[in-house]
Length: 79
Image 1 (cartoon, rainbow, N blue to C red):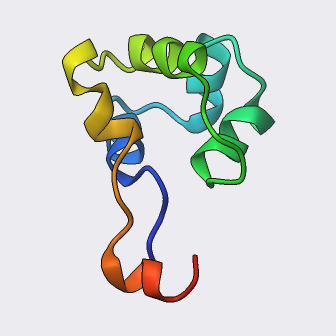
Image 2 (image 1 turned 60 degrees about the vertical axis):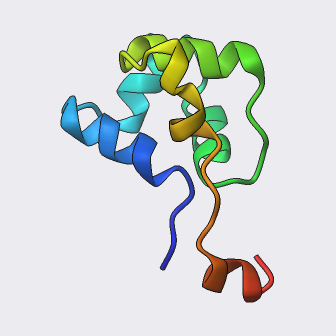
């Protein structure tokens, strides 16, 4: 099953950070980060910048972590 923001989730794991810790360090409610990570709500630029800073994502790599395409077979299923 496809998970939204897979590369971002991998980055959290590489840094041994749980989603709640990332949210706290990015000054976000954990529920807000969860809604973004599950695709229920879109990210805004400020949130992207704060999370990227927390997990040390260079500005020129933000797109690969926050704007990845879902696999074609997932898109076909109506998601």
